[in-house]
Length: 468
Image 1 (cartoon, rainbow, N blue to C red):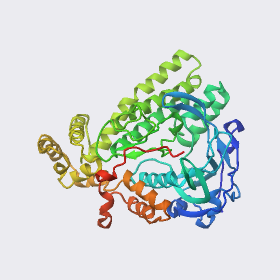
Image 2: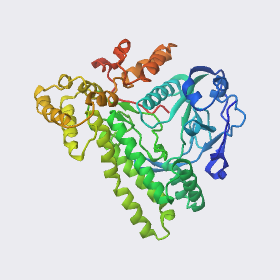
Image 3: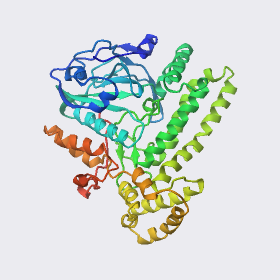
């Protein structure tokens, strides 16, 4: 039995549409995350393939599709909403309240002509990457399970259908606030603000306090993305969660060769969401949240704008502090100081010039082998003495700090693509192996050394796709 406690379903019905999952032909289990089920206090036997596919709605669930709107690639898209996801309900476990959503569970009133389904590739990608992110210490949605539907979905060709059971602190987005602001629904905005504060930031003082809390959460999150060479790929306002979790792993990717302006997403033709653009895009999204909250910040519009601008202006300092913590640890600093930014940027600049592998270069620092990943030995020699002198002036084990901050394993794009191709042929062994290895990304794992390697020239993935 799953002990549901569905607080979102108790909000007014203009927040959502009550919608049961659309049953599928022949669900079969691909994976069940037993550790996460235990954390959620859900007995594994309650998570059958029938339940994870939506064919059997558990007692106590109140399935619904959430309404939201938003900007996509900087353009107002209007109403969006859950077009292929159904919120089954909420459970309260060891880490607080969590949503359980079935992604790919069929058409909803927000499907906008889509089929409401998902195919196997994006489901496995999100499962692997979201679980890897959790193991890497990044706030993220989680994968509870995945099933095949026994049906095919049509994209460019017929592909096996699948459903992902996703767990999140909530699915409240910047776009959820925009949805009601665009409609001039002040009552709903006030309810949503109070609900979000109670659920995520109980110490926040009103709408302005909520904006400030979300700003800090996003600054920390994006700094962690950058520290892993991660590119979200589609940072639209409907994909920014108020909880501060990474959400929606569509065209996401981890860099191999470091390039600050790197883009993978096939639809990001202008580089809006490149690796180095992500902080500015987070701030842009926060500005859209601030616009939605203005009537609640202060009834005097001018005063509200000034207060919101003060919070938004503090993002740069919050992000830089978070970035310094992340990258300071990556080069072994126990207590990084603002002046250490020059040391960090010096290494990143040399890595970019060399086209060095992002993950392997940082991992090699702890072994004193960073020079091996820079194409110009002079680049290392012109940087390393200052770094070594800085480490000599601090307390703490720099090697241990670096080993704890720099993973040996990330979900590399070519490995994910190979895993998906194997799964399409009926072989799920690479999928399960990736999950086992990525659950311990900071461990050496000699028997998985091949998964730490960058792609060969023929294996490189140059573009990723949304998967819808």
